[in-house]
Length: 351
Image 1: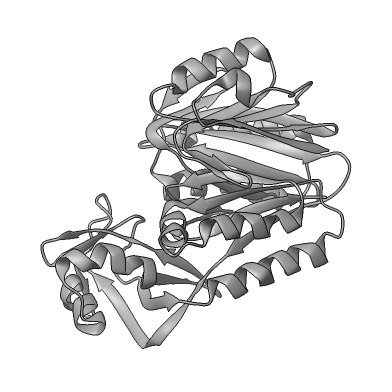
Image 2: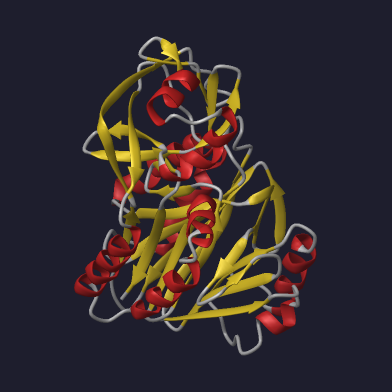
């Protein structure tokens, strides 16, 4: 298979798709002002080609912040693209679509992946989708777009998740998740007084969550929102750990970017040597896949801000070129199988 990436910093779709011939699957990463127009124009340019899209920044060796990026696969993939609607209330109502698409693609654990773009309620969405994918042990990578809109096959949807099931006809696929944080000290918290709908942590070990965070890290209310780049929370999930970013201060509580429930066990994290971890990730992928056709990744918006603030974003994208054809999305939350995580990088590698 082959991966195409084209972009226009000014939002010129014709410029972004220049040289794209005979695509078998297209991902559109557009801006808030031109999204609907780009969705319609893309469908006219490549009628009937399975596609998904969202509002968000894209990249290969450079970031496209407010223009348009197009990622496409060709030369040996089988694809089904579709949408589950009403994700805020009842995505399972549309699960038959995913079941039928999975049967049509005839994918397996070794050669198939699901890529999704979501408008929100991610944890529920991923539980719904993965209830189907896990039967065939098929992995998922994706993220949340901006503006509450996604597209599938030339149509724009709100309150929905767009997905593409991609089977590599010429080799394997494998997904990865990169974590650039490690545990800080031996802090261990039991969450309580949570508000699931608003993603609020009211208390940690019975004490107001904001004050617990401040007393450990010695930060003001205003500094909490930037301190989360260095010190997010982590949620224990079996042998794994999901990163939880702080969104805002809510009185003496903390509102987060993913749901925390009463009795969840949380730890405090701190930033690790992210440059060394990037090199380790690249080496791991190269060892697993000596031959790579494509790498599609989703990087968290907070990772983008952190790397940009520290002057590393450009170097990061250059280092990732060691993988070959690499492109991706800056997301507002990352999806990895049935996990909704923050401040992470998830990716899928095609042999």
